[in-house]
Structures are given as structure tokens and as C-alpha cells.
Image 1: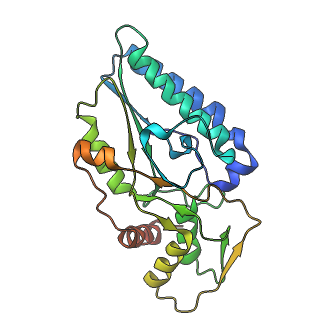
Image 2: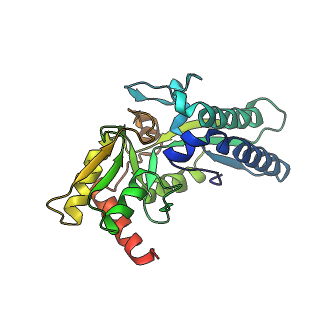
Image 3: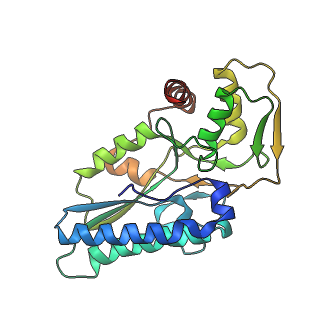
Length: 247
């Protein structure tokens, strides 16, 4: 279940309710339809927004209903959808298998690159491609995130589809590495061979959680999966795709 109403920091902060009703309705209807039609396993793409605002690496059992304030609505939406999955798997007769996936910040080809809904890597790639100089960055650039290239994510999901994951299970799917926005800017500068790039850090613009680290020991042990794409390679592939497909 990948369908979702999603966006970047600007939309989440300015209109936080935008993700509530559409996603709850989609998730509820898809779970109901899947159950009626005897789907063997329902895989729900959740979010790391279900974790608290902590500096340590988040494990699957660290979701404790204590959400980062700016994620309060989207975090609750995702968590409630997870609980609905649990209901279908463990609280009814003739249960349906469900699997919860909590991904990192996904990026790569086919991402949203428009200014209103793009997330940090997509927005920054577009700025580099359009030769913005100076480059404006929302926040101070020191936010720690976990970025995962989309191909690695898809590879993991494909392995889990036919794997016996039990009636109900939860997995983090991430890089397990710490990356700051400043590091992304540095790598993009190298790729585009820009020696003198002026960067303006606008701390008045919307930014989200300052630290998000994700533990991936469970998924690596379960299917011996590990991300193959470095941030450098992932950024190159993203730029090349955007160059060919931008209008």
C-alpha cells in the first residue's frame, strides 16, 4: 500500500491536516477491500514519523505514541493505520496477514520535484540543475537524516513479498547511516563540479525533526538485506534522471 497524500516540510507545517483525512480514508478502504477479496498479505508503507524525537537509533519497538510535535498529526495518522493492520491480523477471526514497513527518507527517480511538495533531496537537485547560486537551504543544514535510494527500498520490498513474515510484523527499511543536508550539498557540488557555491541558510523557513537515526538490524538479520547504493551514486542517478525528464 504505497498510495498516500504526502508532501515536504512547507505543506506539513502550513497545513498539517492535509494528510489526515485522505490517508485515513485510503488506508481504511484498502484494508477493507483487501480483506473482503481475501488478499494473502497486506504490506503497509508507514513512516519513521511514528518515532519520538530522540537522538538514538530508533528500533521497531521504540514507537511509543510520543511524536515529534511537528509530526503529531501525520505521526498519529500513520500509527493509527498501523494499528488497523494489527486489528486485521490479530483481533478478528479469519485474520489477514499484514506487514508494516517504516522507510527512511526515500529519494531517487520519479520523486516529486515541484516546489510545493518536494522533499529535501529532490528540491536541492532541482536547485542545482537550474543553477541557483546562491542555493537557499531551509534551516541550518545540520539536520541529521537517513536517506535511502529508491531502488534499494524496492529490492527490499520485493524480497519481503514472498517471505513468511508471520501474521503481523514491523520492519525499518533504511540506510542505517547519518547524513546531513550540508553533506548532500557537498556531494552535489562535487558531482556538478562547482568550486565556489554560495549557500544561504534560512532558519526562518520550515524545517522538521533535527535528528532521525534508524536502526536496521532487524531487517538485515531477517532477510540478509543491506542497502547497496551509496549517497554519492544515488545522487548521480537522481540528477541524471531529472536531467532527462525535467520540463
